[in-house]
Amino acid sequence: SISQIDSYGQIARKILEQNWIQPDKRIFDNGKISDHFAIIPTGQLPKTLSEAEQKIFDLVTRRFMSVFYPAAEYDVTTRYTTVNGHRFKTEGKVLVSQGWLEVTGRSVKNAKDSLPPVQVNESVRTKDVVVSALQTKPPARYTEATLLSAMETAGKKLETDELRDAMAGKGLGTPATRASIIEGLLEQKYMRREERELIPTPKAFQLMTLLHGLHIDELSNPSLTGEWEWKLRMIEDGRFSHETFMEEIRHLTDKVVKAAKQYEGDSVPIENPI
Image 1 (spheres, rainbow, N blue to C red):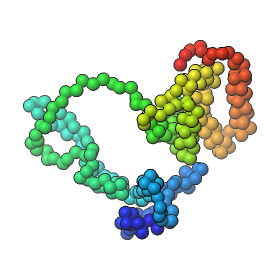
Image 2: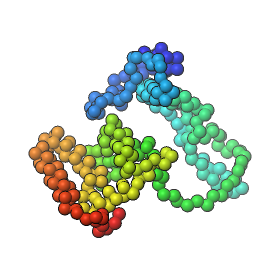
Image 3: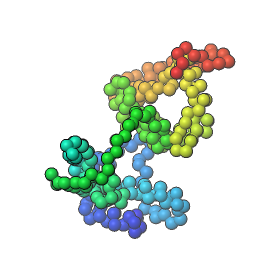
Image 4: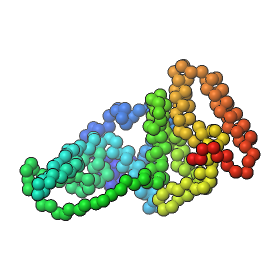
């Protein structure tokens, strides 16, 4: 078992000694299993792993063990410091109990975003004063990590409560397919990597403009997935007809195919450019 590995043994033994393994739905919930359960370590001990494989194994193992630990506790603070009659506001938090952060190796002392404890009316020294003239910046480009996260939470931005609820915990794709979807877009030249960032290519803009010009924008809108998930849920509850659902999909398919067949131009149709 993983308790035989020195770097994990102490953590595993503490979980068992504190009796932290409980039938808690936060950890064990069969109702949330779809394609497969979470990626977890097995009883087989790794012997020959590459450096990259070892790092992945360590991430998975520590995440698995951390879920049994109690929550980390912070003292959230707002401080007002007076310097030469000027009042400055500082917001932050002080980590007072590591909880699951102990598994990651983060301690109270080295938490970068923690504020050091002080007493009320304690005198402090002003180390530096900097005046910065800043401007608002556009959102950062997606990286593979942030795009995966956006796919996972895509339903949060849908307009109706029904669609948001239907996509809650689902998003676009599944945990098993999201990475391959991104790789497919890269292989088909719809986007390219530039260091860590993902950049859409002219081919991607052309496709989006084509869909818009052919009036089939639903293929590029997450609300379509939300609507399907919502109707599938209603089918499960007996509140919507399976036959009606399949007929709607056939109708959408016919619409897409007819629009593609009727398009014979040499250029992308543009009514209202994107």
